[in-house]
Image (tube, rainbow, N blue to C red; front, side):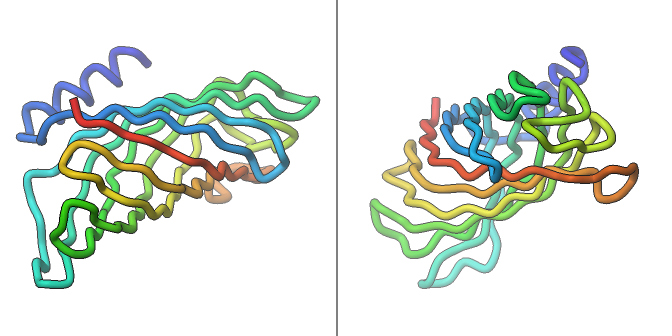
Length: 169
């Protein structure tokens, strides 16, 4: 698994991604357990639909999440990787944004909290909103859903709702 993540990060760097940004998030699951996430993002060197209203851009996101929840499977870990599209509004020093992405995740087991995924491999769907402060900081909220898309049963799925902060390095 470590080799796969290292190869993905090297590929991102070679593909001309912008500077890296580190992200930290604290949240809660849909069942009331806690989550803690650290991630690294690599901005895309592209933007589309630039108008006076804003622009569409994005980033590659790789993350590690610790899930402390439930009687059946507290202390679960996951690694995830996703392309994330971001629409930034305006052009000032503080810009509101919305984001959405679909990626892949691998869990340390087949459950998190009291939810049984049926497999350790899952998909990650996310939406979020926040503020970009200058060119180096972001704060916001996110909702991320994990499930295996009915590839294998059971497919309970789980959500994490979190507050995040990121800083470009």
